[in-house]
Length: 294
View 1 (cartoon, one colour):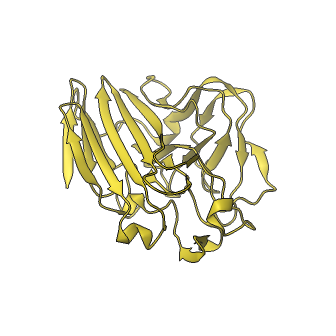
View 2 (cartoon, rainbow, N blue to C red; view 1 turned 180 degrees about the vertical axis):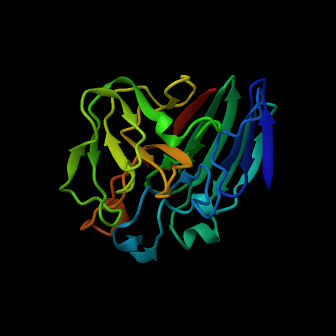
View 3 (cartoon, helix red, strand yellow; view 1 turned 90 degrees about the vertical axis):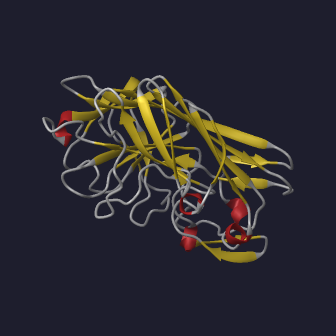
């Protein structure tokens, strides 16, 4: 089921399936600013990545002494969440451990997802609670896709990713199979504030940048300055990506708090580097602020 909120600038639609934002529309001109989710290209909009980001080593994990199979980016994006609160400017959803989640990840948890409109900004806060586990370790991240071009007068080459600080983004590689290979570290660019969107930018999949100094990363229309700007401060990993479909029809900015599994890593869940480790009754939150300067 889908729920809507709006303010003077934006109309936001969130689906209970995955607690996923499926539409952000400008009230000034009616423009849709999220990717439409065309399954022929990429059938999602802005999924939540939980309880892990990327792939598991060997596509499986060993947790509480039992082996579990796992696909990419966890399961929260594929499950039905419950609307628990709604105001004129906010929506809150909840996913709790149940029989279906324990069949994939044997831990007790609560995942809350709050969306709030503030002017031309969407604030999306994810909160994880540990109701009863001795220790709850998890990974988490965001994966929003923004529609380009912004209008029919532009093409994808009219855009660039723009930092607010001078950067030499160092990337870790997950080639060729989506797992950290531990050997390939490279600079996407050096001493720059921008990454041009070129026809070959994503020929080898995403770029996972580590330890950026910038507080924001934006997708900017170069001749007009119109932009979608994501707050990335406090995120150790920020990915950029688009589906290998030419011409590009969307661009992703993905702030993550954890990384994919290692090519030759341990299958044991407790050995996987996590975003946070919670004791009983503890909680942890992270927020992505996305501003639509259009």
